[in-house]
Image (cartoon, rainbow, N blue to C red; front, side, top):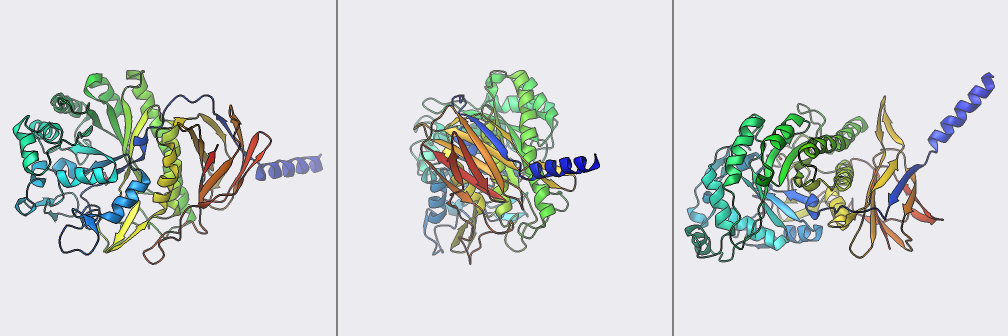
Length: 511
Ligand code: AHR
């Protein structure tokens, strides 16, 4: 009897060790579109994101630029297919007065960046600079309006200044005098930022009232776009905030409600961005995967008030947050394979909830937090996160294909995380893309993938992986981590067998 028990438990253990992950994709059940706007970015007047990041100025620089904006950054972001870019903050937005940033640069008033180190803000990068830059990148602008220290009139005027036809008002006249005849047609507007915190420390009921007042005066203009107004949303798991806003704001006054969530080990002890243990890696993976529960719970509240799903959940700040590197600018951090994993699992979560998550912004684009680009004087590098965002951009505006994943666990101490995550879509040419992530730091994962409703003939793929989880690109070794062709997927009957190496991101293309 004892021998039988030992045999059975050994067999069970072996089966567990060799257990296959399974994924079933329903290729004929797709109905929701993965909005390209899920792949948005964020640029704040913070550290070296704008100044000495995007913007090096027109004068006294040898760095190739267009009106002061680095050409290498424009080029990299065009390749990334950035759909929309949020600006000027963040916390900075609620202290920003847009009229300080228009007109001749030598006449613009100097102010102080009260949120990020009290550094001087000379306003040389303002509305025209940002909106023209968006045109060069091919991204739609997403302007964050000042509610915390501004006025209703100031925000309404900003919308008129950028959207009204020339000759309609003194504001559109002023814009033309400042060098721009044609309106930019800015559709996306944030009405304040983190109203529960740096945006004014408000209670949700109070903010909902203020929001209604601001939104009532944010009007579409003749010939302009239909404005998409986003209410400042919850901090992580503050479901009460979402509940109050959904309850108190009439449906016709908003189009989106925001959510901010950062993957951080501990706000008082964030840890190094590029020198960390597997335990720290595991904790960050746990935090990143928690996005799934957050969006599902916020969505459940939204569904109660808006079953037609008219209002979008806009995750307009997300990403990993670690200790800043001294001397490199406020909130400057390196970006490793760990960040590639955050990006991979988060984008899978957004893709799979695309019926409600229709817009998101990674924080932040250049030299701040989970940046896709880092710069050092004339040098520029693309981070592992850039590569994941680029590999995944095939999902933009494609039809999401629902899938079920049965995954092995990635275990540390007694905590279990699902090792494999996935999302899939079919684009307008009928091409299917499947993105797969294995977060396990040590074990590869064998996956049996069943594709229902599709007869694919050819398969290609790309992989982002490296030998150490702390691996990253540097100015000395800029291409240490970059996508490579993937050969670990094979058809076997009507199934696809895929082997994902430890901590890797793969995107497959099936035709
Ligand atoms: O992204 C950095 C800061 O984090 C933003 O300014 C703020 O909105 C958030 O707290």
